[in-house]
Image (tube, helix red, strand yellow):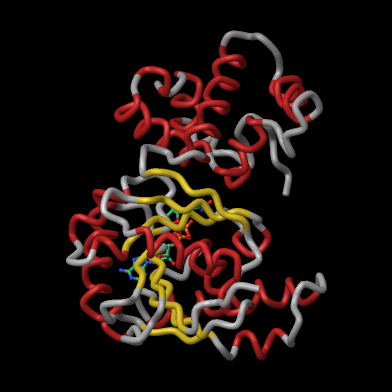
Length: 285
Ligand SMILES: NC(=O)c1ccc[n+]([C@@H]2O[C@H](COP(=O)([O-])OP(=O)(O)OC[C@H]3O[C@@H](n4cnc5c(N)ncnc54)[C@H](O)[C@@H]3O)[C@@H](O)[C@H]2O)c1
């Protein structure tokens, strides 16, 4: 069994950051979560506690949830991260300026051997690394939602990431009990690029009246054994999130990622998927 990092910092304890903190704490790491203030820090810790309680109820923890939670602490400034952290994962909102600023501040707060990672789902990892003095210790660690239950971490090798950094990150992914895919830094990596391509084509098919959403989804879930169809998945991810990624991929990879008009219209109407009760489906819960 690969060894988990001794100490991990997580910057941003939202949906993804809390899941990342929970996963490393469960694997035995001491985890320090950085949030933007006291209230946000308490909310982040509560998210981790809730996640651990759920994992315990499902029989997925080998030790009591409280003991795992005791390994998680919070601070409200990156300057308070432990200098001897083995790894710091950035999981703040998808804003390149915010991410670059925080990563540069983290680098100043930690030691030379600390690995820095970003959980960005689509931004250029190479560009985020230009603000760093040690870009060879920086890579993308793209976790999936919900982190504790998902099997995959996509490791994104930026232009200046060292081979040794990738090998160390691979060990840590295995210590979490997850599988890795290693991809070269390029727009949308492997997962978002393929997932969005399928989702956009499914939306164009609705637009052209090829079939109803249920039928298009069934074609993929029953015919191709996808765990769920591309339109249902778009509803779960959020149509606004999908539109933002499509616009980015359109700008970087070209016309084949042009967002369909129907997606723009739905977002403009506030039909964002499950979170607003309506997307390609109606959500009652
Ligand atoms: N949600 C997903 O399905 C998903 C999947 C993969 C990757 N991602 C990526 O993960 C990142 C985080 O996404 P999320 O869904 O967890 O967002 P989120 O909004 O749930 O969490 C972001 C957190 O960052 C905190 N934050 C903001 N500014 C901060 C600062 N200056 N210092 C410390 N904390 C700060 C916020 O308080 C919030 O708790 C994004 O880059 C996103 O693209 C998201």
